[in-house]
Length: 116
Length: 113
Image (cartoon, each protein chain N blue to C red):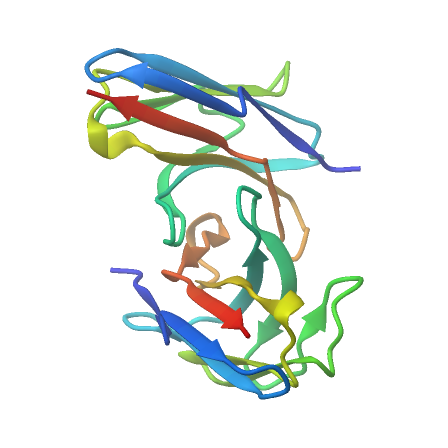
């Protein structure tokens, strides 16, 4: 149980385009979902926290107009990178928690974004 | 400021040998500590999770220890296998922190045949 999926697993896009990444909790309802980005050889950095039906809370330094987060249901959150630039190239990972048992976060497999 | 420091940053071990990874934290008030394994290009996978009242927990060949007094944890890998090559991340959660986690920088382990 507690499986989180992400789609796509990798994407290559041209500079200036927008890219949408989906995060789904497959076998549980996620009260909260988190979006992280990870640069090579570095640890995960929290970008934002989203609760179903409400606006996401962004970490300091993360542009909310550039990284649009929608948490439309208890099993789906999306991250849209708008007007992507090469510096947005990174590994994006989502996680989800059901609010039970230590509020454990279950991580998705990640999405590799490359902006040309 | 909540921080999690891991050491070493990386290590190379021979297949079949044991190794121990260290984690020191300053997160307060402490809720729980987790060790994750992250393969290259994949998301983290939970190995163990411990509260302040637990001082050891095992998951197969992985054994984590926790000393809440000194705010230290270790992850011991026994009889390493090539598939143990990965990054191991120590993550600490604070009480009433909005579910936010404090991540260590990770230890990159390479197991050589």
